Length: 514
Image (tube, rainbow, N blue to C red):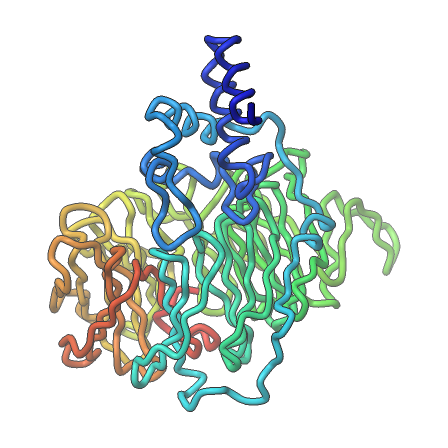
C-alpha cells in the first residue's frame, strides 16, 4: 500500500474528521510545495488573508488552475466541498504573526547569474521615451518604444505586481514590487532582469531615494519599512514601525520627497507621519521633550540623526493616501473615514487646513497644473462621481466636476490643455472624460471598448500621445493623438493596468502622479 493509500485508510478510520483538519491535510499535500508549509509563499504567492484580500473566485482557481502560470487545477482530485474548505483554510489568519528579518530578506535574494550590464542601450529607441506596461493578466511587463510603440521586450514579474514601478534617477533601471513583497530589478538598457529579493510578506509600494541609492519598501506584514541597496538588492535597514506609545503600525505607503532628501511614510494604525532621511547629514530629530540650560547643550530623549534617521510628525488621527505639493513642503492626507482632506506642513509638522472632500478622495492619483496664475490640484473620488479641484495657494475648493461615476486615475502632461479622467467604478466604467484645464468642463468622452473597464492614462515623453488601458484579460493599450483626441493605434495586451513613461516619472512631469 502506497503512502497516499495509507493516509486515506487512516482518514476513514478516524472519520468524521474536522473540516479544518481535512483542509490542512489537503493544503500540505497539494499546495505547500509551491506556497510553503507556513503559507508565506515560495515559487507561488503567499496564501494568507493579507495577500488574498482582493482575490476573487478562489474556488475556481483551485479547481481549474490559473492560465499562463504553473498553478494547476485540482478538480479531478478534490471535491467542491474540500475545495471550499481549502478556501476557508487559506483565508484564515495565521496562528502567529510571522516575522521577516534582514537575514530572511538576504536569504531570499536571487541575482541573475549571467546578467552583464550593456555599455549602452541595446536598442535604437530613445531610452527616455520608453514606456513600461504592467500586464497583470499573465504577470509580465512590456517595454514599449514611445515613438513607434514597438514592444522591445516582455519580461516576467513576481505574482501580482502592486503599486507603480520606480525608476533610477538616470532612467536606466526600474524596480517592480509584488503584493507579497518581492522586488525585481530590471535593466532597461540591457533588456534584462538583474535580480529579485523578498523585502516583506505583504507589501504596499516602493519609493526611490533622491540619489538613487536606496529603495524603501512599505510593509503591512510584518509591520516594517525595509530599505534595500538599489545596486545589490541587499537589505541595509529593516525598521520596525511603532508609534511613540509603542503601538505597532502597518505602513500604508512610502513616498519619495526628493527636495527634502527623505522618504515620507503613511502609518495605517497610528496618528503619526514619519519622515526617514536619505541624507547622511540629516537631523538630529527628537522624539521627546527637548530642554537646554546651556549654550550649545541639548538634553533630550530619542534623538536620531544621519542616514535613515526618523522624524515623527504627530497628527490628530491616522492619515492615508498622501498627495504632495510640487515643492514637497505640504502634504494632503485623508482621514480613515475618507470624508476630508488634512493639509500638513512638513517643515513645522503643523496642520495648515482641512478640506471638505467626502466620497473617499483618491489623493494618490491627484495631479497639479497652472490655472489663472494659481497652482491647482485635482483628485478623483472612489465613492462619488466627482473630481475635486483645489487651489493650492489658499487650500480652497475651486469646484467639483460632475462625472459619470467614481474614478480611479487622473493624468495630464505639461504640453496638454486637458486632464484625462476615467470613471473606473460603476456602469460607465468604459468611459474616459477629457477635461479642459482652464474651463474645468468636459470637452469629450471617449469609449474605446463598450462594456469593458477602461482606465489609467499615460503620456509619451513629448506629450504627443496619450495611452489608455482596456483593463481586461484580453485587453489592449489604446493610443490617442493628444491634440485631436482621436485613436491612432491599438496594442493587444493581457490586462494592462498601469503604464509608466521613463521621462515623465524621473522628471516628475506636471500631470503625473508621484
